Every structure is written in C-alpha cells, then in structure tokens.
Image 1 (cartoon, rainbow, N blue to C red):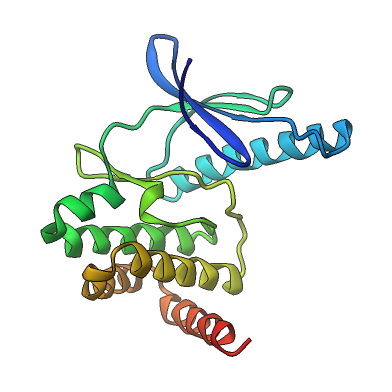
Image 2 (tube, rainbow, N blue to C red):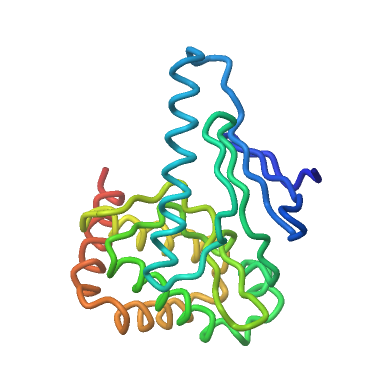
Length: 204
C-alpha cells in the first residue's frame, strides 16, 4: 500500500480492492490507552464512520462507497475518489467560487435535512469530481440524529474554516448560504443557532 497521509487518529493509504483503486483508512493503536479500551474505541469509531458514510449517500450526498470494514483491525476500505480537492480548486480557479460554494451549501442542506452532521466540514475534506458531483470526505467526527446544536456547529466551523483558508473569497460565502437555505427547510433556525454559537465564542 502507498501511504498518503498520517494523522493523529488514522493513517490513509492508497491500495486496490478487487481490481479497483481504493483508499484504506486504518486507526492505529494508542499505547497510552488500555489495550481493551483502545480496541473498543477504534472499532466503535470505525463502525460509526462506515454507517455515517452510508447514511449520507442515502440522503443524496456523495461520499466514498465503503468496500470493506474490518472492526478487528479498525480498518475501512473505501472507494478512491478522482477529482479536484476543493481547497486547491478555489485557490487556482477563484472564478468558480460562487458555483462551488453554492454546491457545498446545497449538499450540506441535504445532509442536515436528514439530521446528519458532518463534524469537520472544510474545503480540504471535499472533492469536486469530473462529473460535477461534490464528494464529502472524512465524516468520522459527525453524527446521525443530530440536534440543532450539532447542525449549528457544522455551519460555524465551516464559516470559520472557509474565511481562514479563503479570505479573499469571503463574498462567495453568501452563495454557500443560499444553497443551504434552498435545500434545508429549517435552515433559518440552524443559521440562527450558528450565529448564537459564534457569539458565545466572542464573549467567553
């Protein structure tokens, strides 16, 4: 397997699965945790991520297809997604920012309409595929049956990440909001909660 990245929680490798290009995500054991607890935590997080990926796809939001789950090894084998990382695309082709941001908002709206929170929504965790679909990656910090607070946190985290990474494209955030409101019936409530969360951070 070809290593692609090593993170605090998991390592990512490029591999193949039954002749198809694939991504392998392996959660490494942590020596500072009791081995039994560590195994349970890694297995539970692997199971949760696989479930969220499937639930997002059922909600009409593109995520990598799960090919195989190994709970004993805390490993997910997933579809390899071809396309442009959205963070790099926005840096290289800023003229596409409004259209891309609208699409992000629309897909997040679909996700939230099904009470699924992403948990770590940044432009580094998205790929724009050649067919025009937007694929959300790394939903491992998300949750299903999400309450209003979790949905508001999604919006606030994306707002902060977007303005940090793409400050020159700040006006395009309005396109994200438009896409979101057009695809989330309770979008106004979520945006109000996101603003409340933002204000909490200012005064604490």
